[in-house]
Length: 180
Image 1 (cartoon, one colour):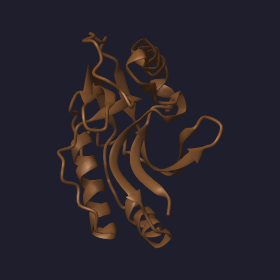
Image 2 (cartoon, one colour; image 1 turned 60 degrees about the vertical axis):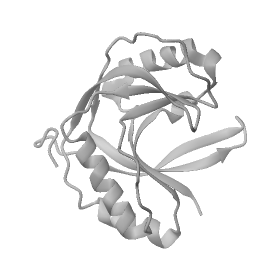
Image 3 (cartoon, one colour; image 1 turned 120 degrees about the vertical axis):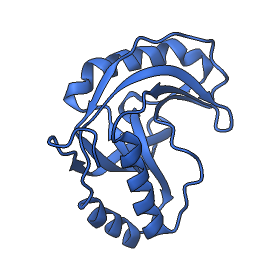
């Protein structure tokens, strides 16, 4: 069964300048752990884990009915999750961001039965298998997301890690900035 997650993709053209700076920040911090591949940078909304083909089909159909607004946010600080050993770049809570994540987590729970027990923390993982990085100040970067997607995590034999591929995108409605 494939490992799936809903996410906002940093590869959208309006975020390319900010993405370059995030890649540079990741390189600056790389001594603390294993950098996430540049093509894998994203903002997770709901991690689903292993999902059957039947549940994947239902998730794709139900996601079509989600009405959410464009999300505009700013990067804020570098943080660290001790248990998985991950260094991350935090994002300011934005209108609609937490609501979209909550909606997708509820949808996923209703279909797969998986419950989401931790509070949502908007972030972009920069390093894995990491130690606590030295404190660093970051320049606020503006990010705008016009779509969300369902992604699959697959083994990447060339790089000995994972490769994330988008299975399907859904637009965020321009007429409802930040609203669900």
